[in-house]
Image 1 (cartoon, rainbow, N blue to C red):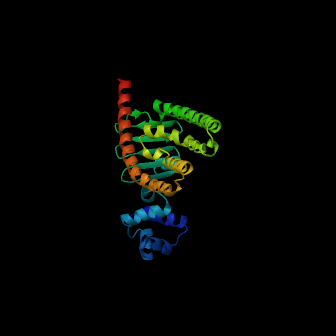
Image 2: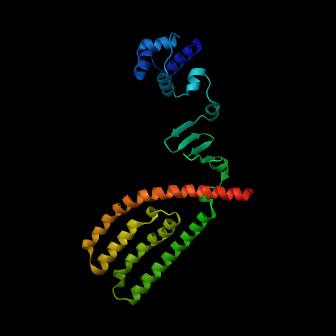
Length: 257
């Protein structure tokens, strides 16, 4: 190790407010080892260099060469996360995501940019026309459901004896029916308001035929529903996401032909 690097190690240690003994305890080495590093008599191995960089919250380049990466100097924020499938990099310039198939998303001040594995720009899933059509359809269905339930309840209340005390369960249809369309569109079972359906069925059985027992058994199906369809949704959504990216990239290619 050269003298400059040794001096740099000492400066970072002092800047962190650590004595040689305290730093040695953190690294699991002897104080004499730390002293030899700072006197350029020996060099820390790779594991200790990585540990030192983490302790001082700097990069290995900055620790060894005294030069911070350009991105760090410019941004101030530089966080990097990676697992077996996805990679996320967060800095002041934005958020950059990359999956295991090479698809990338960059979110910054200038907007959202989506790139496929060929580095070709594609549209994001939520900006497709179908998404806005879905939101419009959801609003229409919600409005019609509210209006229909109110009208049905009033008509039944005036025309059927005892309806005021029974048909109030119809109001549970208001949060239930709008969840059907997005569940179908996104092909995800867990978007559907299944717990609301169970409450609706339970109250209907209880109010109309007094099946409070064994009607309560219906509630046991809620955890079963999500246990079964949760993993299925995860599998389907991943395949749909891949298919959407392929289709969007294909549409992009056609637009540029």
